[in-house]
Each structure stands twice: as structure tokens, then as C-alpha cells.
Amino acid sequence: MHETTELLIELGAIILALGILGRLAGRVGFSAIPLYLLAGLAFGHGGLLPLNASEEFVATGAEIGVILLLLLLGLEYSASELVSNLKTQYPSGIVDFVLNAVPGAVAALILGWGPVAAVALAGVTWISSSGVIAKVLGDLGRLGNRETPVILGVLVIEDLAMAVYLPLLTALLAGLSLAGGSLTLLISLGTVGAVLYLALRHGRLISRAVSSDNPEMLLLVVLGLTVLVAGVAQQLQVSAAVGAFLVGIALSGEVAEGAHNLLAPLRDLFAAVFFVFFGLNTDPAAIPPVLVPALILATITTLTKIGTGWYAAKRAGVRTAGRWRTGGTLVARGEFSIVIAGLAVGVEPRIGPLATAYVLILVILGPLAARWTEPLARRLTRKPAPASGPVAAAAAGADSAVPESSVPETAGASLETVETVKPEPTDAAPSHG
Image (tube, rainbow, N blue to C red; front, top):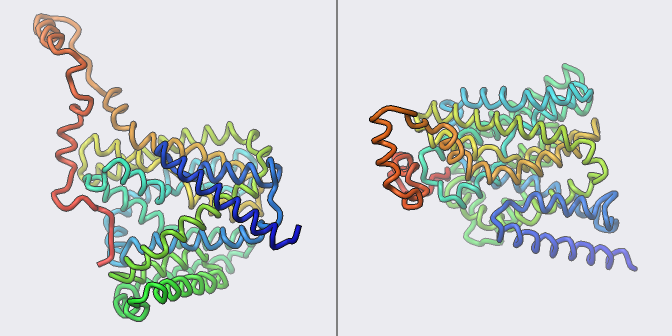
């Protein structure tokens, strides 16, 4: 078969399969990420039907997918919102790092993978999935809840931390010396600082220069600028993903909104390709040996993320039920964990299978934790009725007079719901203005 013909057939089959898997995930109310990873495992090296002709194209598409993921994440925030969140939420960010990065680093050292792999696995277990969490908040109708800005604040701090972490990890993986690594970090911090300064002081001018009433021109200019900046960032050993994120921050107002609407379908397509590509490069036979460590790590970091959310919501004055909801919502891991593992597989190949199994577990558990952490915590912490005495007997008799089935399931949360919903419009997600 002609090479181009085989390429078209394989690409068509991949994209069609992604569409079917995405619709299936939507019907059952879960993220499509685990299905994309499983599809990559099925058709990658060691899978059922390896793909050969389209592998190089899919690898390029995966790079574009990461860039678009971070660009659209940056478009969700303005520079002023990022600075404000950093000032108010940094203690929660420190707790988040300690509770969730340390288990990954310790696990890598216990497995004998070395310090560089420990830094990489720390990032895998640290960063929550902004994409999965945003979808869960919308699906559960919690965008107007009082705890939602807390959740978004933690995610923003994690995203900002990636601007420092990814260049540092890249330098370590490249085997640079302390001086070389420090130079890379300084370049990264300088780049981030310069972009934030430009976005704060001259964001409107940048947006005006990019703006166009023609959707085609806007799409081409924003996409071209993003890919160019990402390439330059990569050349400076900063990170293509961070470069794309900073471009998103620099754009604001109608330009950001228009670019988001135009690029969202492209992001969804290439992000799906990225997750498939990661699965393609992971041998399914390598997952069973790391399944037990992945389960242990997933269990530990589920509890630590819940603890992170509880602490962050408590600092913000959110009541008990909202604290549990915050922790449960932050459990999901996804795109950043896979990005970090993808960078590290060249140094420690076993990180790939472990990260795949870990993300599969938590991307499925994440939506369940968001939905059930608070009801389960309320049930487990409910105070038992007094065991004896005339008052207890009278209370027991009064309770028994009301059938349990007549009490609405959400009655216990009604007061919390009233107090956690904002008086403003329900869309609490940050936006450019």
C-alpha cells in the first residue's frame, strides 16, 4: 500500500475512534482521557494492532496538543488575576506541594529510580488536572459555589509553579550542570516575569495588535504566535508548554474570548491525539509490574489532595461541607502528569507505565471523589445519638415517627448549599476583562 494512503487510513481510523470514545465517555459522565490512554495502549508498541505509518504525524500532533492545552488554560486567566491569586493563595500552594509532591519523590527513591526520576514523579503526583476539574465543576453545577474560587486558586498556583518546575526538570533530564541548570531557571523566571509585566502593563496593546474581526485571521495569528513563542521557549530550554501558557495570559478581553472559541475544537482534537500518543509509546506489558505501586500512590495522594482542599477552603472561610467538596474535586490528575512523565521516560522508562496506570486510576476516581467525598464525610462524621436516658428515649421515639425515606437525600447539605452559593452570577470561572 502506498505510504500516503496508509497514513490517511490510519489517521482517519484514529480520529474516528477518538470521536466514538469521546461520545461514549460523555454518555457515562466520565472524562475521555482514560479511554484515549487505553486506545493508545491497544494500538501502540506491544498492543493489538501497532500503527506504523502515522506514528511520526501523531508525535507532532501530540506536541501541538500540549501547546494548545496550555494556551487555552492561559486564556482563562488575566495577569492581574494570576498575581492576585498568588498573593492570597500561596500558603495553600505550599501545603499542596508538600503533601502531594513528596509522596511521588519518596516512591521513586524507594523504587530505586534515582533523584532525577524522583523530581519527575513528584511532579506527576503533585499537579491536578485543570481540564478534568473544570468539566466536573460544570457537570455538578458548582461553578457558583463559594469553594469554587478556592479550587481555581489552587489550580492557578500549580500552573504558575509549572513555569519554574518544567524548565528545572528539563535541565535535570538533559544532564546540565548546576550552573547550566541555574541559568535555565533564571532564563525561565526572567521570561515569566517579563511576560507578566507586559501583560499587566501593556496587555490591551498586545490584544489590540492581535485582534481581528475576521475569525480566520484571528485564528492564524494567535495560533502562529503561540507555536512560534513555544518554539523559542523550547530553544531557550524554558518549555514549549510554559511559552504557550504565557501567550494565553498576555491576551485579554474579546481577543481572548474569540481565540478560545476558535481554538477549543483544535485543542480537543490535538489533546486527544496527545493522550493517544502517550499510550502508543507505553508497552501494555509494562503496566502490570507497576500496578501495585500505582494503586498505593493513588490512594495516598487522593487523601493528601483532600487534605490540601480542606486546608485551602478553611483558610478562605468555607464551611465544613464545602471543604470536603474542595478536597474531593482536586483529586483528579491528567494532562500535566502525562506531560511530565513524557519528558522523563528518556531517563527512566518505567515512569511511563507507572504514570499511565496512576493517571488512569485517578482520572476515573477524580469525578467520583468530587461527587461523593462530602456525603461520605458527612455520614462518617455524623454524631451518634445518646445511647440511654429518658431524653434519648423521647428523641428516639420522635425520630422513629418520621420515616427515613421521607427525608430528602440533600437535606443535610441544604444549609451549606445556601451559604456557599455566591450572590453573583453563577459563572465563577475567571475570565479576561
